[in-house]
Length: 168
Image (cartoon, rainbow, N blue to C red; front, side, top):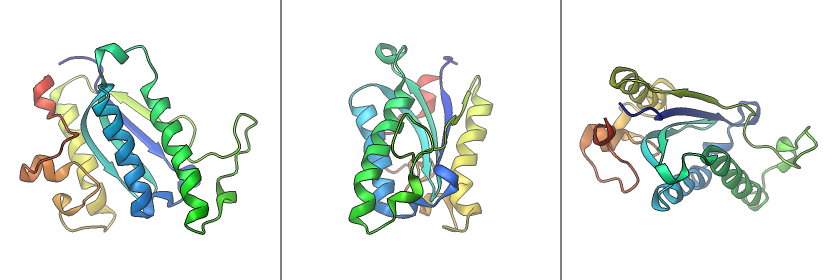
């Protein structure tokens, strides 16, 4: 297996339910779609939960030395900042205590792990797809819209997912 498929988890600041609103889940999806369309990553799986996201991705060769994760986090944070006042929500809950930014939407130091074999990759894919079921958001993984589960379990079209077996 090609080294470099990453399991990435970003958590909303203080585990707040920033992503409970579908509009903000779409910001995450739009960012992933941009990274795929611009050939920065291959996306193998994802789930967008109310307070965190899990992503399985790999940087494309031309972007191997770039910080795609930082681009993802920065873009989504900017979009969240614009969306909150429009929704009448309190932006102050995301006021940064750090001097390098005004607001912070993602916890610092997200979790990352490299998937070194198919077994571990499939375990992570199952884990992320079962997340909404365990959280009581749906009965079956494939019923949760903001996930790649339907692509794998029902063979539904998904224009941003690359099947992980294409790169094993």
